[in-house]
Every structure is written in structure tokens, then in C-alpha cells.
Length: 323
Image (tube, rainbow, N blue to C red; front, side, top):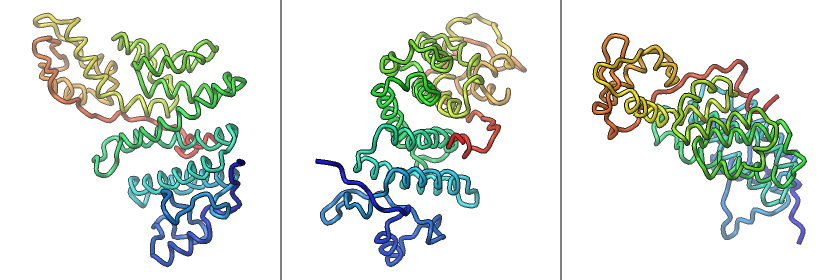
């Protein structure tokens, strides 16, 4: 049986526009009635999702992604968590339309990458949000669902293995799961390719797995901005492991280590953050040095969440859309 093909040429089907207007369910980001975007909805009795006139064909889906990330994403007069929730819902609807129509791998490769970059950026942007405002676990679930899907597509279309997009997505998957053996296994077919970005990501992940944390501050700034975003949200755990490892290796009474060097190693923005981190784990700080003591280090306290500032040289929407 052939999959159904959508015939809705607007971002939102007419019947949904009428229904949501009558029920006063128009989102504040849809103030323009000509730019409403189809909501995500679950299949239920009396709610058939595969009707052609409510399904948008691939070109419309691609244009809708571009609209969301080019015009809605940069909005600053509304809290970002509200913007995020709106875009996230509409992206899920786009994926749903594409799945129902069983779009081709080539069409998926036009739709998924901007979504993946959006979720990568959101993990960084909303890093300090309260969990009731932004769910980082659900965000990363969306990120991983999309990136695993596109990596699977690259494996099916082997002629794309040297493609720039393939390099970006595979390396992004690796650095979002630093030290994860299972992820490294999944990307084995790509490792043999002569790709500097994938190679750098693999080496970093292997070094983290083996407890060699020095590679982190040496390569962090060499990665693209989206890669830095997904690495930065792993820093609390990595910093704790770095400090613990250094306390084991440098353990000696009255052995003090310069805060300035430690700041670079922990990828902190300023020395004051390094001092706060050391004191959080009960290490003694005197002036501009910290005593690295195995007996003093408190491994029982939770990780300290300090956000790493990332400099974006161009508009974030441009990076996300890759235009």
C-alpha cells in the first residue's frame, strides 16, 4: 500500500485554523493569521492524521522549518522558554507529517539538521532554567531521536559518508555523548573516513573514557559553536571528574596548584568560578592557588552547574539553518 501524500500547501491546514480560532487556541506567536503553524496532535478516535488535505508535502515542511527558525526563533520580546515550547511543538508536527507520508531519505536530510541544531542550542541556552520551565532531558531526547535517525540515513546512503553534513552530524552525536562506548560503536563506519572533525570528536571521547581530561581544554575551542553547546552541558560532570583526578594525582600536603591554570583546564569563564568550584568540593583555596588534596575532596556533593559562555560570531538562526 502506497503512503498517503499531503496536499496542504500552507503551514497550517484551513480546518485547524478555523477550529483553533473558534476555540481561542491561537498562540501568541501566531498573531499573524496568515502565519499559523500546524500543531502536533496525537492520533485518537475521530482524529485521523493521514487525511491528505491536512498533511503538508516535503517542500512545505522544509519551508515551515525555515520559517520557525528564521522568524520565530530570534524573537526576544517573549521569554525563550515560551518560544522554545512553541517551536518544539511545531517541529514535532513537521516530523509527524513527514513520517506519515514516508518521505525519502533525501527529504529527511533537508528537514532534520536544522531541528538537531535547534535542540543542541536550546540545551545550552536553557542550561540555567528551572526544570519546571525547561526540561533538559526531554530536549536531549528530541535531539538524540533526530540525530540517530539522520546517522541511520547516512549509513543507508553510503555515498554520503564524506559529505560535510554527515561530518557535522556524526561528530555532533559523538561530542554530545563524550566517553560513551555505545555511541562510538555506532559510528565505527564513519571513523575510517578522512574527516578531521569526526576524528577530533572520537579522540576527545576516547580520552574522556580513559580519564585523560587534558584533551578537553585543548580541543574545545576548535569545535563549531553547536558542538560547544552540547559539550558545555556536560561540563559539570567533567569538571568534577577532572578535579577528583587531579586530587588523586597531585595529592601531597601543601601542594598548591595555580587557579589561573585550573581555570583554563576546567573551561571556566573567570577565576572566581574556579574558586567557587574548588570550594564547592571542599578544597582549600589560598589567594590564587588551591590545595589539591585527596582527603579533602568531597565526592558526595552534587555537581556545580556553572554555565560556560559561548561566543557566536554570527546570528544563531544563521548557524541553526546553516545558511
